[in-house]
Image 1 (spheres, rainbow, N blue to C red):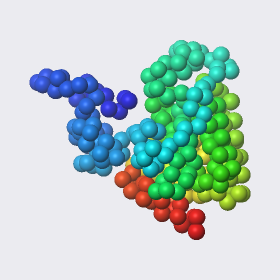
Image 2 (image 1 turned 90 degrees about the horizontal axis):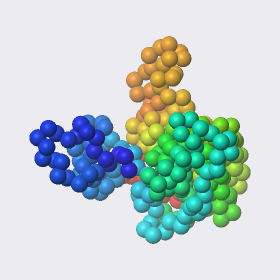
Image 3 (image 1 turned 60 degrees about the horizontal axis):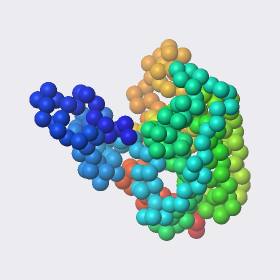
Length: 280
Ligand SMILES: [Zn+2]
């Protein structure tokens, strides 16, 4: 995982740290503190000094939210075809193959069932490390199937998002996933089955414009960038400086776009409380 790899600037000129195995130490993007991976892991991947939330993958998030050994994965090996024969700097099929090899994942979301403090749920968590957490046909289909599962079992649904947006290599097929997942969530809502959306850094583009913002309760992690277009694009379009904290979780809470900002440390407890409330 890229987040734990040391960048060159972390290696001081005195050269002593070079003995450390790669990836054991990591630098906080928030405050520059050098933290040992073990310490970070024990602290929910939150910087002990400035509380910045490091980006983590689905595996880490399942561990944080679910009771031990309860996760059962669905559609694990579903992978993308290349319907458009898309080539940019390299063919899309090569990009997929390389991403699978690099991350050990098959696409940018993993879905399944499990329990949260003994409450049975259906859960999906995205991986930003897989082509920027982009939503193509596989992400859309897996999320849609997870919603179906929640609907059939009448179990609450939790989706943990982190995404750069729609997957441009699949063109309009990516955009269709917005309609598909949103339509499925409407069915879930009609059936009265709860859906909690957890937005982590970053949640942007088509994912924000579909399932991430459609939770019965929309929860964000502190400091997470959440938006549709990125701040740079907006600044260029409107030709004005953006307010401080624009598109960050706390700003969106103030403006009413998210319901709560919850530290990852308290996430399981918070989700449990909400689920119990909704069950009653
Ligand atoms: Zn920090």
